[in-house]
Length: 334
Image (tube, rainbow, N blue to C red; front, side):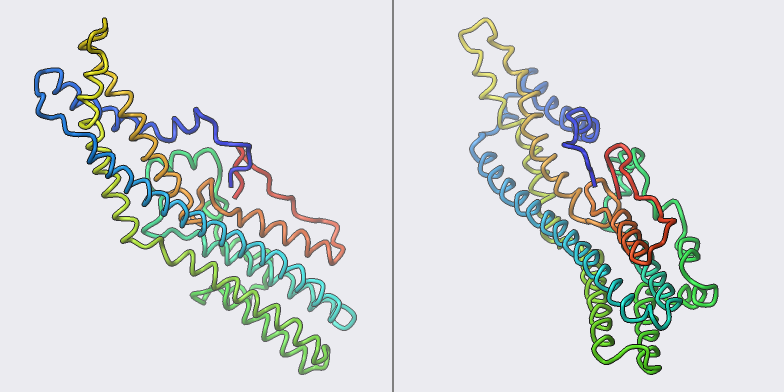
């Protein structure tokens, strides 16, 4: 997540410079051909304007859908924050008097669940963008924690060796950690350490965690529909290709009767670049937010949120040696 006031203008220019180079060349080719006498390359601008209207609608639709996916992902992790705090004090108050060691063990297992979940959500998918040059270059400004360490090493901080090996043998580690919590809870209930009401309360929190995990996995594993994504790309490409051809005559006529006659044609390059860059960048902005867990600077900061939850829950147990909060690097926090 970008934590500054805004992306700088220079930052944006550098981020989109590859598209600027390509768009400049695409604008220059018809301009040079027209200047050399190939007047027939000019096309009426009216059909292009109609196409531009369609592109504006579909790019706007995509950006709206991208923001909805991002905001839903943030709401999911907001729910995980609240549910974790509730789980912490309910569990502490129910079991601390009878088995404080078990409380600490279940707290640590919850930290392990948060860790396993964020590692699963950071796993790359074929439709995500972090592998492309534009996004890969920008990612060098910050660090994606899940790519610097291994899940095995992180879980060692929270689980016993026996439980660690058991969890690592499973495909969906986060799910199995919740299942282990449920098993511990059932055993405590069978021993009489908690009553019916307490068992129901804590079990309801585990169900909420399962729901939160499932919602996050749905966003992670179901991409923005490929049909909408593809048609947006194709229409945008057509529009970008035709804009420089549609502005030729209009800009050539701009200088008639003035000292600039014959030269205003060259305005086609900057004006076409400006129009096509706007549309292309709007599409890129939507694409940058459509996968909110991949590790881009526009993603939900799930690592920071997980650390905040761990600090809050350790504080509930009056632990003195709290882990440090995760702070932004170059205005980016993940």
